[in-house]
Image (tube, rainbow, N blue to C red; front, side, top):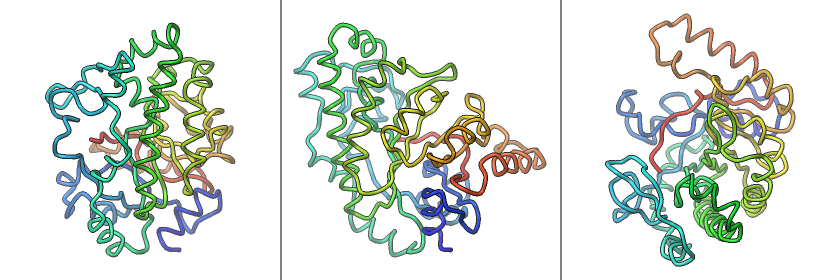
Length: 307
């Protein structure tokens, strides 16, 4: 099998010739890993999928200092809050669909496709509608507003969903075969909002994104999303990525959802980055055994990403 065929087989719950290696955001670490660059790193490290190259527009304050185009506030590269509070704020901090073109250089994308013709080309970004909405407002304000002004929350979610469709749709036009939507929604103790709230304020927007795209969509989230997985199925996600081992048990998730969702991850990066080679091998073997031959793709649990 080619790498592309291997990934497609796993996402379709077929048995590939081996379990695919599919990590999402390693581009920020390529210098430490001794690879040639942020894109070539994927193939050089034996990954079966390559991240589509993209860039932040030069004028954006995202991951810098100041208020970015979404209303997120940054201080020296760290998120510190959000300013969106009124319809006027929402209008000001909702870039038009055409802005998505600033994120891609079609010539760079074509070069990557030519360089790695047998690899799965995917696009991933932490710009899912829930995450982008609560970061734009600030999580506390967002949660309080659910109870006091649901219409405004839905307007914000609609705007952020429109953006997802603009940038994901363009990525697909440029050749992305899989979309990984970063939409961090939980912490170690469980979801940031209740499953009941999720069903009203998030599920319809996830479903709209998935129904609008012709390629598989994988949901990435940190934390324990166990209570949200039934709605991941309803939304139509092809798989879920992360599955933090300190929050979720791969064996349990596999038994309940493994026939309907492809699972990516659960390896403990604290072990993989350690010096105990026997421990690393044992952790990899655990994941491969619990993930199984069908519907499992192996990456570490999570890697930080700027986007």
